[in-house]
Length: 141
Image (cartoon, rainbow, N blue to C red; front, side):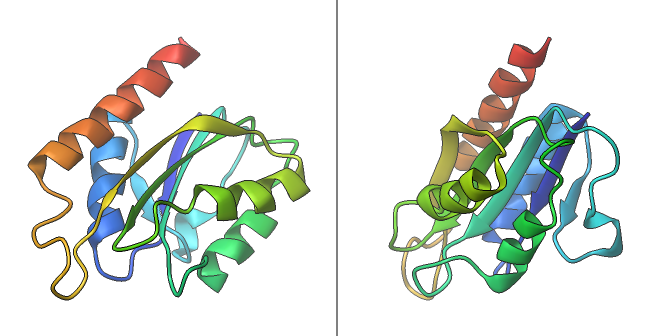
């Protein structure tokens, strides 16, 4: 099973989540939604977030803490940020502590925040996000 879970306060990461989910042929679900809990074995979890105040939102941390290491085979990170490069190191630390493998490949692009990076993620960013998903899901076949 492939799953896409994300947290998006501004809508930027949600745009990536939807592009990734469409390319993977699944539904993107917001972390915290009733249906966000994973059921059954997950071969690949696409996990998306932005950096909030130079770290991860508590909702994302709690979601990761709730993952079952016996059921989640691997995770791929995607993110949008205005300043910091990506959420990868923050998520890696939490997943390593849980014994859940994190792929080295990640997808990151700038996200619009106030006057920074107007219009991002844009159509090219969304196309690259879809290509990222197709590449990783193709590796499962």
